[in-house]
Length: 319
Image (cartoon, rainbow, N blue to C red):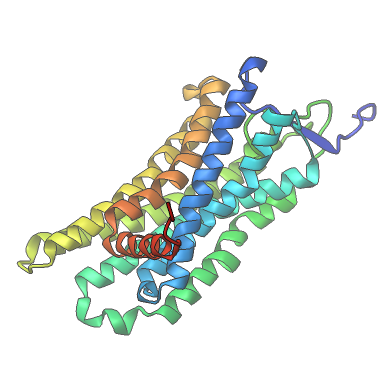
C-alpha cells in the first residue's frame, strides 16, 4: 500500500468490448436518446406549469417524475456522449462521486413519486368523496418537496460520504456508462464488502418497500373497481393501467438487475450488465412521458391546443 499512489481521476469504459468504429454510432444514439428525453419530459413539465387546468395533484406528481428523469439524463448522458463523440472518458473522482450521488438520489426520488402517485389514485378511486379533503395541491407540493430534499438524499448521503474516503489504487476504470456505488467500490484497494452490503440493503429496502406499498394500493384499487357499478369504472381502470405500465417500466428491470448483480450464482457478463443498466435507466425516461401523452386525455388535449395555437400564430404564406 505504501508504494501505491491514490488516483484522483477515473475513466469511463462505457460499453465494454465495443470496437472503436462503433463509437460514432453509439454517441449518435445516446444524443438522440437525450434529445427525445429533453423534448418529451420538458414538454410534460411545461404543460403542467403553464396550463391552469393541469394544476391538479396527479399532474403535479407526473411533472415531478419528468423533472427527476430529465435531471438523471442530464447528469449522465452528456458525459457518455462526450466519451464516445470526443474521447473524453476521464473525469475527476469528485465529479464521479457527485454523479453517483445524483444517480442514486434521482432513482430514489422516482420510487417515492411513484408511491405518491399510487396513493393519489387510491384516494381518488376508493374514497372519491373525501379526495379533496385528503389530497390537495399544497399537500402534494409538500410531499414532493420532502421526496426531493429529505427522503431521497438521506438514503444515499451517508454512503456517499463513506465511499468518498476509500483509497483508489492502480485501478481507475469505471466499467459502465456512469458512476454508481458498485462501480466505484470495485476500484477500492481495501475491503469494502460491508459498505456494499449496507448500500445494497438500503437500496433494496427503499425499492421493495415502495413497490410493496404500490402493489397493495393497486390491489385495493382493483378490488374497488371490480366491485363498483359506477359508470366511471372504465375511466378509473384505464388510468390505473397507464400508471401500472409506467411503474412496471421503472421497477421490473431495476429489481432484476439488482438481484443479478448481487447474487454470486447469477453472475452475467459485464457487456450484458451494462446493456441492462442502460435499458432500465433510460428507456423508462423516454417511454413514460410518451405513455402520458398517448393515454392521459387531459395532457393530450392540452398539447393539441398548444400546437393549434402555435400553427395559427404563423403568418399565412403569400404566393
